[in-house]
Picture (cartoon, rainbow over the protein chains, first blue to last red):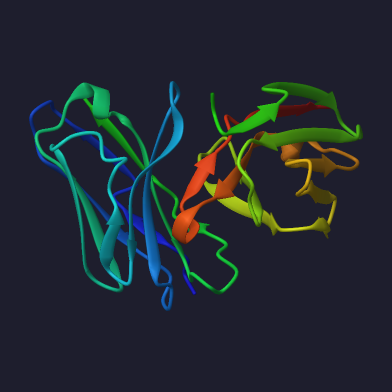
Length: 114
Length: 108
């Protein structure tokens, strides 16, 4: 398996622009997690899905952030409009709940909002 | 107060030294994760353990559920072990709460 795939790996955009981050989980995994990592706050859970359904989005910072999982093999995290304080590395991870629960992380998307 | 505390925050060691990183958590759990993040940024799961000890190469992880404490040991450390080591406790549906991380630098 190729592991968790994220795209793009790097994104530089201007304040106010829409940003879409993409994630393909490991085939067969039924849970998907979006995390954000910053120097100040470390790793934080933004939202997670179980069987494509959002279970807990309490970590989503504000309404500018939204996430979807239209099917078991694809998820998006969208920021609209983006702000400089959104600059961070965004990780996607997936796991098979009930199968050991070990999470496998994607390589991350480094977002810079100017 | 973070539910998951790690110590030390930063650690410098010479090649060959035995290294210990500690993790304490305040909420009872059934398992604990140890993750490694290299300077390039990628995160790799090292261990998930619920009791006793696990070993993988030069890495050993131990956990004491009753004392809410886990340790990660590296034997015969090497510069390529330089990374940030993060412990994380799973909650509902595998939702992870992360420790603050320990930045390890192993020098020649």
